[in-house]
Amino acid sequence: QARVAAAQAIAATGLATSMIDVSDGFAADLGHICDASGIGVHINPSGLPLAPGVRAVAEAMEASGAKDMSADLDPALGLALGGGEDYALVLTVAPQYVATLHDAVAQGGLFDVGEIVDPSAGRRLVDADGQSRPLPADGWRHVG
Picture 1 (tube, helix red, strand yellow):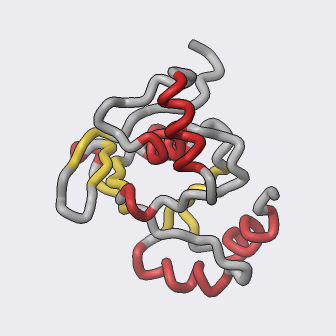
Picture 2 (tube, one colour):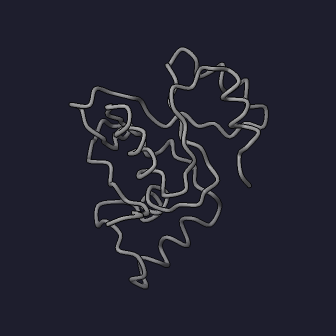
């Protein structure tokens, strides 16, 4: 279901510095924000929410060869990063306003998945142990 009410509640706070729907894939749409804003981003992969069944679907896709998954990336994470049409929102907000946005979106569903960094720090997946790797640019490409 489209997150129209959540988007309106977030916009009404005036605190979000950017926001986009995930139609082309999380990594691709986050990339649009990074490109437009001239920023880098570090994403905590364990912070990305996975719907029930995503892991089973991703593993079945990988086993069948239906999707070329990165060898070093968990198949479910790969699907979460590169899949689209999620009816989710990706937004940026200053750290001191994260709790305010959680309060503003009554139905919940906001996940703090990373931080904006200097563009020289790149676009990376950074796990809890500090292991870092490039954020795949997977997603739908309209022109290519």
